[in-house]
Length: 441
Figure 1 (spheres, rainbow, N blue to C red):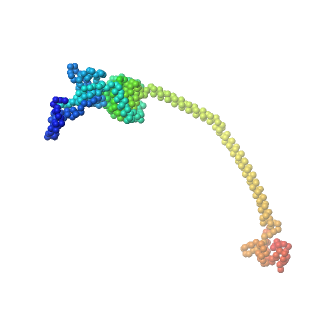
Figure 2: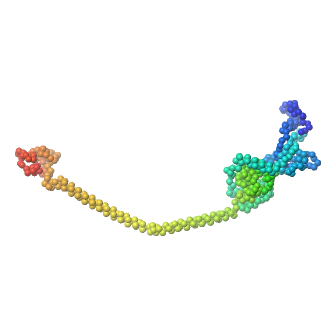
Figure 3: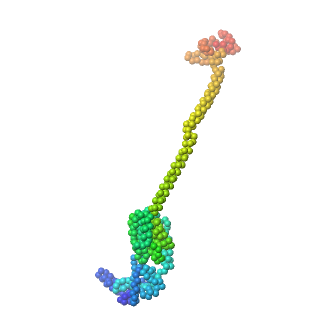
């Protein structure tokens, strides 16, 4: 704190006049107020990554720059040089540390600096524990869900590649991919892959490639390294950016045992950069061999099908019905003729039977009919009354003087009734008859 800072900030604040355009505050008042507000923060613990160490021989103050690994923000730090020299773990640029100190605002220069009295290097165990906690958090949010994984295109026209400049990972990806498919095109973004600037640069490159509509898949590639070297690929901001991207992303970090969090949130994890190149583009020679094999198998299958169908046709043609098609018709013709003959014979038999029955019935009817009766000597007597004729059934129907028509077997006789006589009696004026029928005649 500058020696010009008042001892009682509250009293000074009360004494400061109200601020307005007519009564502006001087620079010193603003600087003093800022120093007062920062002083109220007290001592704090801060975590960051050392990006610069200025340790001059013979000086009583060491200057450092502490940077946030996930954002482009930094803070000036001062400390006793012995804190750096006596650190149990050698501190260097890129080291992750936790410091304890108090912020100070220098009113003379208008700058803020963190004066630390304790520096604790973040060990591998602590880094791994933090990665595990972040892993549990991302898993709880569902960012590792396989349903979020986007499919990798079979043959991408353009591949985005984010890797270190002139790195072995870049060389492996380009060499293997172009050997497998010479027509593949790459959009390369060289960034830092470790250190304090790695995450911001990779985020910028990822956003740029994701906006490019020609890029169909993006590869994050880096060679192997220690936990600290690969720490950037377990950064929360990078993991969330991978999940939010619309382009499928392949994570090819380190070697097979290495497993940063980017491998879990990416759409595809490749064991190595070489493996990533094999996964993003097909092998032209293998595909051609596959096409040749499929063509050969298709031709063989077609020939087999033709052979089977040919054998089936031969079998069909060898069957009697196809060898001699008319034979079945002839057999059917003979059967039809036989059935027609049997039907005709049956019909004729039925007709003869019915004709005989009819003849018998006719004979019976003839025997009992009127004509046969007349032929035996009987006659039918009718009384003629004008145009009407009435059959005489009783002597009462033909009184004396009635005009009669007598039908016999071969014709009819016209007569007149002379009188009537009941059977067994004699009528006056009438001649006796031998029988009733003769009397009626």
